[in-house]
Amino acid sequence: MPDLKEFTRVINEHHSSLRYYIQGLGVNPAWVDDMAQDAFLVAYRKWGEFEAVENPGAWLRSIAKNLVLNETAKLNRRQRLLDENLTTLMLESSDDDLEAGGLSDLSHRQDALRACMKKLSEKARGIVEARYFHDRNSAEIGDEFSMKPVAVRKMLFHSRQALAHCLKGSIESTI
Image (tube, rainbow, N blue to C red; front, side):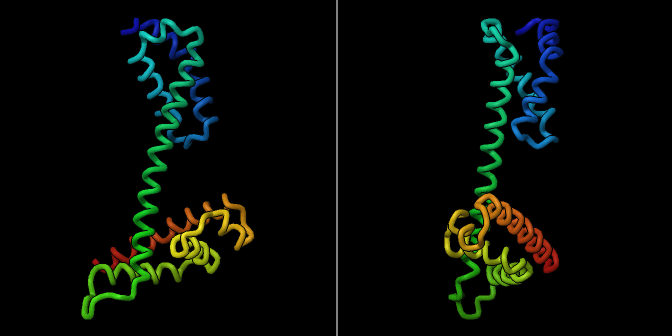
């Protein structure tokens, strides 16, 4: 365990610069303080390694960078799971082979999704359909719609949010 005075000195010397570094990594501004605090906690736990470090600021920045990378990876995994769930729902909504008399929860969700898709702009709807019904990537969609791939991904993100909000409202209104 580190000497409390020594650890406090390291925090005082590097707190501000570490926060600026984390902010420069593109982290959500609301997370900067939490990420800096987490970096100092890791440093506290690994204090034995600190004694051999020549540049404590660089050591703290490398800890913070790893924490940011880990958090970003977690967020990307969560987003992929959400995308996969939405993709599954969208693919299911294109199936017209429901059992006779089988008005189920699935058919209500499909109807809600179709209604929500109609609320999207024509361009957004075309991009969502190209991505989820035709399994095209953002570069291919961008070529078709004369957009950069990053703009396609941004429009997909906003469209998914709009669909999720619309679906949530549809589900709440049927309850």
